[in-house]
Picture 1 (cartoon, one colour):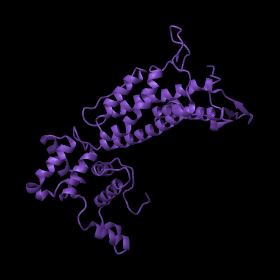
Picture 2 (tube, helix red, strand yellow):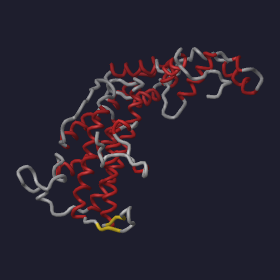
Picture 3 (spheres, one colour):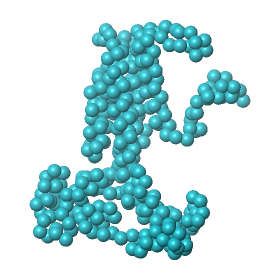
Picture 4 (cartoon, helix red, strand yellow):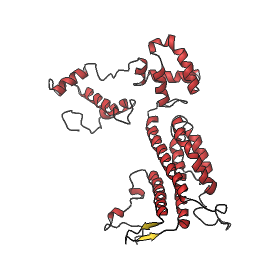
Length: 340
């Protein structure tokens, strides 16, 4: 078999061996998006100085912005297309009435934007970060909706592309693209966080976890609900557009939630940890008692409490994590005398 002489590894220059395809262990969709964004930024930097330094000779070579404008715009536009497709796919899997989105076989930016806007409507936090992208996305779609104008000089009927444009100022465009890239990154980071949040299953058809926590903080103590709940209920329902049934679903979630129930004065005790376990733990810490004054089950529960205290963890994960480390196939050490 003849090896491809162009697309191959070179161990004499290993830091230039780019990892691709099946060898890439991360998110390849993100790698593609990142690549087109970085290519745009590198080309904009070269356009700003109208030059670049050739790595093989250290000599400065000239570039012509009248030619560089096309790959700059193509790369930026393709980033937008990938961003919309990946976001639609991931957002559609959040919450109730999820949709499994497969291959999105279109290059139509306007259609993709409409689908994106409809998808993010399920969570106000995504709307807040996503909708500011609309103007620049539609600017690009107005000039190159299908991804052809910056890729080919003429269409299939031999008509010249961009006939109605005379100039594209790369400083103006570059400023808007850099702002767009930053906004898109903020949206993607938020979406990644929300994927973990929605995995906790603490939401209703109209409320996400953050809404439910905010409602819990506004409720009176549970013992006073008979007298004090009704006025608060009206305020909350008006603010979030809830029916009485919607409000009832939120209350039910709050009452049975390990964390939010404490906000209304209800205890959800960890049955595996009796009230004196921390007294015994203090004795172990001070050297007044051996580690075996705490049982294996208690150590495992304490481990689970520590796990959900990490940044990015949720109280809902306590039970699943405890079940995981208590299982017969768990390979981690539970003995507190052993290094972890």
